[in-house]
Amino acid sequence: MAPAAPRSGDAIFASVERVNAELFTLTYGAIVRQLLTDLEEVEEVNKQLDQMGYNIGIRLIDEFLAKSNVSRCVDFKETAEVIAKVGFKMFLGVTASVTNWDADGTCCSIVLEDNPLVDFVELPDTCQGLYYCNILSGVIRGALEMVSMKTEVTWIRDVLRGDDAYELQVKLLKQVPEEYPYKDDE
Amino acid sequence: MIGVGKIKQYSNVLDKPLSKGKQEVSLSAFAFLFSELVQYNQTQVDNIAELERRLEDAGYAVGARVLELLCHRDKGNRRETRLLGILSFVHSTVWKVLFGKVADSLEKGTEHEDEYMISEKELLVNKFISTPKDMGTFNCGAFVAGIVRGVLDSAGFPAVVTAHFVPMEGQQRPRTTILIKFAEEVLQREARLG
Image 1 (cartoon, rainbow over the protein chains, first blue to last red):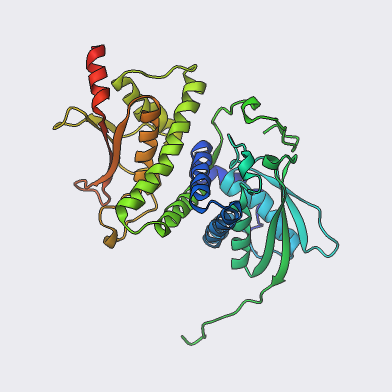
Image 2: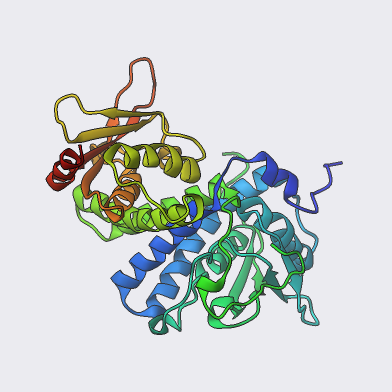
């Protein structure tokens, strides 16, 4: 039997190489500022951040699977738990919790207790429509797409916009059956 | 993190207590982010010089903030005013906070009085990066050069800062040298101060 999947990412986070979160935070800030200057429209910045996150997600899932020892999740509920407890911990060193399940178990919220992206950040009046952490939703969407799940990830609450927590809604749109593009005899 | 799972709200970011700077994220999270920064900027330019300039600009923004943060947190709102002081501040304090270690070396240029070099065998941002052949001398260290320029400039030491690969004998990968060329006024002031 395969070893049981970890219930938390603490041990993995402790064993991987780490960098100071401030370097990460400030670098992310520099990226957002560059996008705001280049693209001008806040909507466009949201889109670009999501795209960057998606690009990261489709690569990050490989590292996640390689290091986390997580095997196939039985249902979307388990997937969400693994993202919150193992995924966030392993990469960002923070934990999240999963709540607000809908009746058929295809839509839930991931609530972040701590968010290393937003230290030192305050949104000026001109950027009120900005989803500052939009890169995170892209990461989740990209990573899940690589394991055959089409999802829609949206921000429900954002402290930078005056809410009391960071809440991401993850909605499972459909599960794509795995396709084998290769033939056995090749 | 205060444990209860609720984030305390502050009306103003300045009211928030300054973190101690001990938090960490995984190196891969940073590497992924940095790679996106580089890839995005590649779409915005048509030559290497421009790409380096844009990365440097991004770094500059980081450097300016790092100086403010460190002076406030570690130095009781004082900052270095002398050339050697600020250089060793960059080489030791800034490096240690950002990259978890002191830079490998800090040297004075032999040919020019106004040049200094900070070298690093394996610069953090270059760790997972190999430059394609057709990109010539492009070095992602431009981002770090920008950080250094941001710190120096904001502290009143304007300088031109560039990143270069320097091949090392017996090593597979070249080291990265951050070359700092101070503006004339900095050296004049330094001479006046004696």
